[in-house]
Image (tube, rainbow, N blue to C red):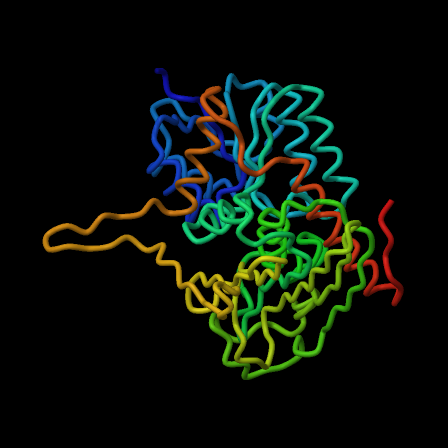
Length: 358
């Protein structure tokens, strides 16, 4: 089967760290177009990953007329929607890095374009493709947890503020840790619960540590003047069926309870969390139990099987769907709901009032 013809828009850290290795590992893709506002970055990426005849662009619109099967959108959050919509309408399938968009209106535009064109659109929520996430999703589908009526979506760092790129720029990113890492935790939680009908949300955001210096940050001290997004955000979401979700997102918090892209679920039959690995708890034979689920590959002498990395499985799933050999895992309809909830938390924090959905 011929390789898929692909282009990539945005050649920054997420592309070099996630997308290029995943594309190479998945195979079956010829990268023919590289776009970045920095021509130097696009040139470097093209030289390292492009096939013969690959071209470099500084304006993604110059790629609209190219004969490509698919594109990867890895630009700052603010431009996700416009770039994805234009690419879909030019006849290309799209994988867009998370979050889907900076607002529900922009996310809905992306969904509408996918439906109008019949092209595939998915969002880069690779946490779904971890072995522990996949196991818990199957367990939930099998009814192991029963009805999940309480959950915590966890995306908390003690001191790990990203100091590169545009992460601290509210205009380009649309927010801080809530839209950056909180989006992963919320997506994972909603997906395992299989609940996409929010009723209302209450949120708070904080700029308590933005001006700190000598921060012991993982990537060095941040620039207080450039740190315009929140350092922490918290949300309380009630779903139409009465289920409750608590969302905690922070890049810098004085806490030892550090977890990222995890969730805690409580159901009528059992509960689950990702503390020190995947744990499922409940009552059996009139006794409380805790099961530790080992999702790591085992080893024997001279043999060490390598599990497929989440980002590679994510890529393989998307490429199979493009070829008509499988279904998407991350549906745009689901990603729209994630964006709506994040937007509701920001709006509630701004107004000091609960945000009610339609």
